[in-house]
Image (cartoon, rainbow, N blue to C red; front, side, top):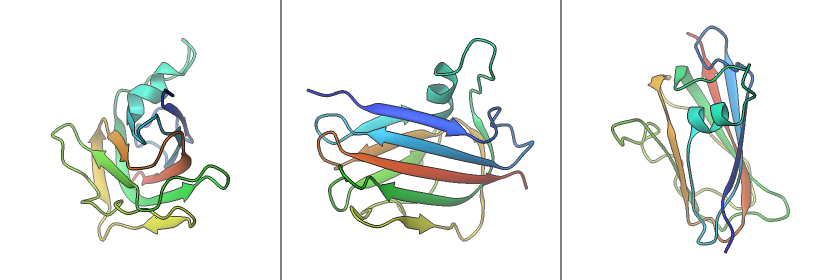
Amino acid sequence: MADQVVTITATNPYMDRCDDNVITISWTSATGGAVAADIASTYAAAQPDFAAKPTKIKGFLRKVETDPDGTTAPSADYDITLKDPNGYDIVDGNLADRSDTNTQVIVPTSPIYCDFEIALAISGAGDEKKGVIKLFFAND
């Protein structure tokens, strides 16, 4: 039985809206095909003691890109949600039914302002499958 693996990098390590930010989430699903992680907290936990330890993400979400791994791609039509602290999917279900072969991009009609922790959930990916999600934030 395999555990999930989630690695997060950010071009703005403070996630504070002072600079544009691309958050890259590389993931491997657990047995059962699921992934669950709080993005800022997971990022902060992996940083050395002297580094920034954000507790939330601030900025305008302008684009989300999903990319299945080329060798251990997730199952077709796997689903992703990005939830705010109230449990609302901030991309309104638009990351459902992701492709197992193609990079896909969603661009919200209006940028989504975030000033909170975002909970990532992936379901239906298949056992020990891999992918990458990029969240593109702007400071205005």
